[in-house]
Each structure stands twice: as C-alpha cells, then as structure tokens.
Image 1 (cartoon, rainbow, N blue to C red):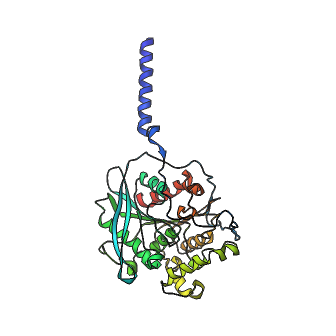
Image 2 (spheres, one colour):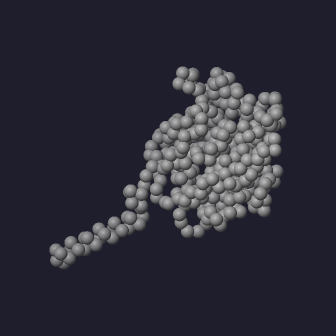
Image 3 (cartoon, helix red, strand yellow):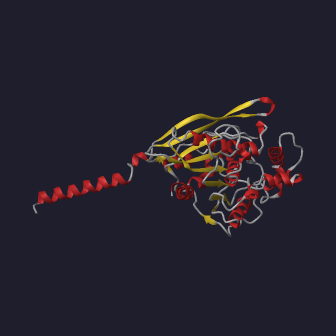
Length: 372
C-alpha cells in the first residue's frame, strides 16, 4: 500500500474513533459545576464561632449499614442534559388557622428526552420552621439530568400553625397533583419516588409508610393515588422526642427552645405539653409506628458527625424497616455533618453530600426502583 494511502487510512481511523467517542461522551465544554442553591432565608442556624462545638457522645451504629468515606471530591457535575424548569407552579390551596388560606407552589425540572419519565418529589428541610423549595439545587439538577422529573415543593410548617399531619398531607397532595398533570410534565405516573433532607427526610418517611392511608389524602385530585414507589431519607428524624439523643448535654439544653416548638408541631399550636409529657402523640408522629411489609423500598443516608439530628434516629428506622421485611439500605457518610444548607448556611459544610460517590448511591437507588 502506498504512503499516501496509509496516511489516508490512518486519518479515516482517527476520525471514526473521534466520532465514536463524541457519541459516547458529551463534549468537555458541556460539563460544568452544578448550579448553586440560593442563600437560605435569614441567618445560618446553629452555634456561632464562640459557642462550644456540639459533640456526638453516643457511638454511631454502622452494624447494619454501609460506611462511605467519600471525602469532598470529586464533586458532581452537570450540563450533560438540557433541563426545563417550570417555576412557582401552584399545586394546592390549603387552610390556615383563623380562616386564612395559603397557596403552595413547586418548582419542576423536566429533563430533555423522549417519553414519560419517573418522578421524584423533593421535600426540603428547615427544622419544620421553613420549607424553601429553592434549596438543594445542585443535587436536584444532577438527579433531573439522570432522567427524572424532579419537583421541589413548599409545604406548611410550624409558623403556619401546622402539625406534621398537615405537612404530610401537603406532600401527598403534591404527588396527586403531579399524577393528575403527568402528561403536561412528561411524567410516568406509575414510577414516583419521594426524597427529603432533614425535616423533609422525616416527612418522606411518613409518606412512604402510609401508602394507602387515606387519613392524609385531603384537598384536590382525590381521584389520583398518593402512593409512592421509593423513598430517599437523608438525615431525617423518626422519634421527634429524641432528635438530639446522641449529642452532649450542653447542646441539648441549648436546643431546648427548638424542641418546644416541635412539640407544637406534633400536638398543635395551642398545646402546652412537652414531647416527654405526651408519648402517645410522639408515637403517632413516628414513622416506625406504621411500618408494614408492603412498604416501598428505602435508602437512608446520615453523616456520622451530625449534631443536629442524631444518627441513631435513622438507625432505628432502618432496623425497624428491615425487621418487617422492607427493602432498606442505610449509608453512614464519614465526616459528614447535617447537610441541610437551611441550617448550615454554607455549602462548603455540605461537600460530602454532593460528591459523585454519595450522589451516585442516591441516583443508583432511584434507577433500580423507578426505572427497573
């Protein structure tokens, strides 16, 4: 073969290889950092620089869990898939004390691509005091680009005069609304998951274990099911009277006002009883109370440096789910604190939660149970 023919053949092979590579991977310029969440409203929560640092004084149980050691890199990246956002979509008008009402909204991210897609309803944290649907934008976008319609919702909180029953009802109302409008937002209504952080983690746990319980189905779209097929609980509570059982006594005393407000979230705004004084009400609010073998699969994440919600909270929930035959996986993230930016006020304190390893576990769980 002549020299010119060899050069031409080599060039053809190089071009073919490049074409295959570009088909398999997006161009490097398309990949970028995931978008940042807006700053949370108000000052960051938790002790200031001069305060004594909270300490976990109870060993973190990993006996039935998997310990992850992700560090803080590599971080997730976005930009591979175009995502359309529908902001401020009203999904319910709900009653408040005194005859008032409140409109609840959601932000819906729809990834580009053919056919209906599984739905994930994201329930933000905020200590049952706030519910900012704009939070956790990096991970929500990462999940949307993985092929999920992701809807981040507002819900009623304690300053609204709400109890946990109201908040759970709002999450279920969002699920029904999205099923009713599945065609509009390219949703597969048969594949719906819920994902929550902190207070949101608690709420999605209750939603998951009350599939089929019509007590929480109030409002509109009652011809639609509020049942879900998968639950992602990130550092959520279970027994609301034991939120800080693993931390030092000084921190528990400092956080007593928060626990007093949570008592009203359990019993109602006019209640004067503490959580310790009403164990029956605490049990009614505990997702463990309602676990049954037919519950949807759970994946649970908790940092072993979390001094806001004790790691033992998710350990108890995970073990109770497994004891009833429910598919539950729990990951303990080494070095990770409470990742809810509504509390930390600083994304740098949440980097373990946006690593490729931890986010990959979350999306992998969704893929198995909502796409499989």
